Amino acid sequence: MIKFENVSKRYSDGTAAVNSIEFEIMEGEFFVIIGPSGCGKTTTLKMINRLIPLSDGTIFINGKKISEYDIHELRWNIGYVLQQIALFPHMTIEENIAIVPELKQWERTKIKQRTNELLDLVGLDHKTYANRKPNELSGGQQQRVGVIRALAADPEIILMDEPFSALDPISREKLQDDMLDLKKNLKKTTVFVTHDIREALKLADRICIMEEGKVVQIGTPHELITNPVNDFVKDFVGNRYDSWSNDFQLEDLLEPIVEIEDQQVKASMTISMQELVDMLVEHEQVMIERDGTPIGYINRRSMMKYVSSTLLQKGV
Image (spheres, rainbow, N blue to C red):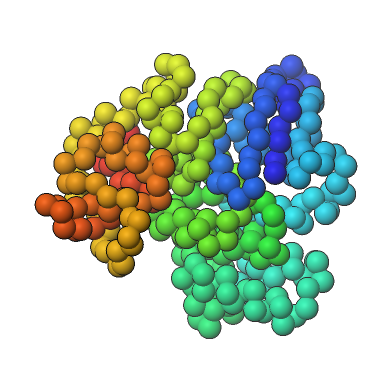
């Protein structure tokens, strides 16, 4: 879907913001880029839609060099969400969401339908919110609108540059949950930049850790936690495994049973954290039994949410 081949970005003063990075993002994947300040993560993101030009190398989208796309065509097919919400204050919420569909000359009825369904999707009833102005919404509500505005024209790719970092913890948690729902329902290829490891662990299919303009390791949350390639990754992610596994309480993760399937993967209440994580790498969810009786299930989402919330409580 998106492929980086030997991509670098150097500035006129000789600063190398990104240095010969190579990786590929799969279609429908939620790919998180993380690292300390100045590591090149935002530069990497902005090179995808040509907001920042490459110095060397090539980026491909669907096998075609981004330099070969018409710039408007490229950007219309890439949604973009910033930390700064940047809604137009003089427009209604509906008008803000409709901007790109109108530029693409969608029919008015189609735009109206799309706007309403997206507002409802993130818990903002369209009958209540469509005709309000941005200043009538909370910060978290405005950022939800910013997210669905990027989705309005049904782009193939969504770029998100630390979109929740300016929000209070409660709003941020709600937006993260919204993103998990959107990820499940829409299956968009998403590139998400953050400096928050808790957020990365909760949202990502795979995480790319960068340092000083280079890619240090790419892997699933489980791979980075259990198999860090060096001390930098271990300090950034790996040693946090013990901090939440030592206090592991299985009951904290259990979701209520809705339906029991014959082929359901099962485990007992005595399962260890490591064993459970390993099972969730292979299976979407695991049914938990006590003395042979199902008492609830644990899925990947509840596991990542538990990890994230536990790290937050510990101040990690």
